[in-house]
Image (cartoon, rainbow, N blue to C red):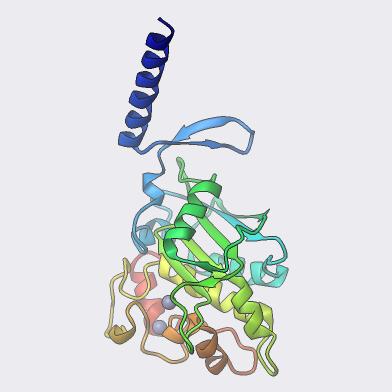
Length: 264
Ligand SMILES: [Zn+2]
Ligand SMILES: [Zn+2]
C-alpha cells in the first residue's frame, strides 16, 4: 500500500513534469514574491526576431530591462544613462523605458560558453514579455568567453531575441590599459552595439535598405565608423576603433534600415 502510494505520487510527478515540458512553461518568483507560471517561449527566439517589437510600439509600448551584474562588475551610472539616451533616441516606447539592475554572486567559472550563459539566464531571469511590456535580459559577467582568441577578446554577445551578455571583466582589463578609453566609453559602445543586434542589425531581422552588410563578418556594417562595425565587440578592435573618447553611433545607412523597420 505504502509503495503503491509512492508509485502513484511518482507517476503524478512525472506526468506533471512532462506536461510542463511539453508546454514549455516555467515557474518564477515575481516582484511581489509570488510563484507564477509563465510561458517563456516569446523570449527564447533568435537574435533579431523581436527587432520590430523592440523598435515599434505596435505590440509593446513599454520596455523593461532586467540587468544582472556579478558583484563588483556593475556598469557605471554614466553607461546606464548613455544607454537610456540611446534607447530613447531609437525606440518607440511611449509607455516608458524601465532599467532594473540586480547584483548576483559570481557563478565561479573562469570561462563561459553561450550554453553556460543561457543556463545562467534561465536560472536568474524573472522578466518576460507580458501584455504591453517587452522584457530584455542582460548579464554583466566575470571570467571570459570560450571563443576568445589571442587577438580577439570578445566583450559582448547578443545570443537570443531579448538577451545579451557583457564580459565586464574583459572590458575592465582593456579600459585599464595605458591610454585606453574610459570604462564608460567602452561599456557604452559594447552595450549599444549588442542592443543593436537585438534591433535586428545588420540584416538580421531588420532588412537592408542599401548594400552595407559586411558579410565577411556576419551581421555587421561595412562603415569603420559605425556602431555596428565588427570591431566594436572585441577589446583589441575597439581600442583601435575609438579615438578621442567618442562613442560610435549608427551611420546613416544603419539608421535608414532602423527607420524602415519602424524605429526612430
Ligand atoms: Zn556585433
Ligand atoms: Zn552602419
